[in-house]
Image (cartoon, rainbow, N blue to C red):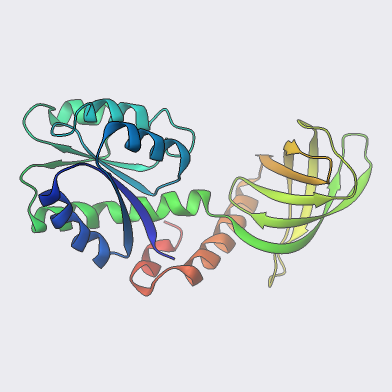
Length: 238
């Protein structure tokens, strides 16, 4: 499982420099060449990194600002590529994490991307969802206990199957044992959504620090198993 990046630029030379550097780091690249398509891609797909040609793409600087307003990519690692109009300070103020100055050389690109790689992996780990089939106990506000099955798990929540419907915004205590461990975890969650078929999404809202660490460590180990060898050293908790 490689990392995913989006380049919004119509500069073929820029793509020619960035693609080999990204491939060496096991980062796939999707390319958009205009504002409209780039804006749509940022809105509908999740990326670990977004690279925006701010000055040589019409309304490119506007895209950089819009990135931080998207639901899925607000925390993606953002690279601003500038060419004399947008200053480095402007780029950082607009939400960039890293700035590349044209003409971008292979050496400069490699150094910048290597410096950003840990942040990209951290972003992947933040939204990574591991599929599973895990039993858990849910204690509702009226102290009624129900059994459920978690179908995926992330740092911030889980998808579950329930016998019956639990209303949205219901808060409950969750207890479960992480697969292949003896780690029994207990935390508080809230039903973020549910349907008539018994499927629901749970958002974690109160998690003790020790429980959060165990959860993050378990997920980091699962993510590391899926990552290419060249990225595995970046996956561990930092």
